[in-house]
Image 1 (tube, rainbow, N blue to C red):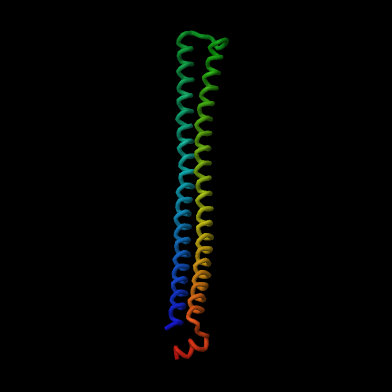
Image 2 (cartoon, rainbow, N blue to C red):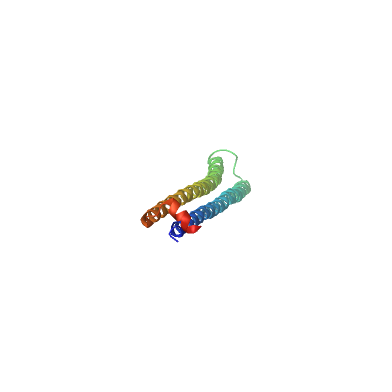
Amino acid sequence: MAAAFPAMMIAGAAIQAYGAIQQGKQAKAAANYNAQLRTRDSQVALDQANQEAQQVRWAGQRAQGSLLADYGASGVTSEGSPMDVLAASASQAKLDEETVLYKGRMKSTGFLSDAALNRVQGKNAVQQSQLNAASYLIGGAGQAGFAYARTGASPSAVDNVEA
């Protein structure tokens, strides 16, 4: 009976170690899933920015067309300040379009950074679970050895008891 107690301690430590490994695998799977979501979100952000930039581009073209039509209807010539206004309007429309694209790229980069962080967290979870498992096994073996030593039985005496 004295040898059964240390054996149960070792078995308990093995179960804890197995649980730690499984927990690490699950944490890694969750982190990888989150990384996939962030990667997808990154592409969505770029797609949305491109769509919004297209809308801004069209709005700028409509504004340019309206200005040209108004100038034409008013008999304005193609020189001087009306042309400066057209150039400034086109310049502002291009700046607005580029601003939308820049914001989309920054948002996308943020999502990609989150995805990379998730992957690192998953890797760290597995490493931590392995260290925990080793700790459980070593601790269980130490406790079992201590318990065995407390019984005062020699290995041959325990073998005789079990036989």
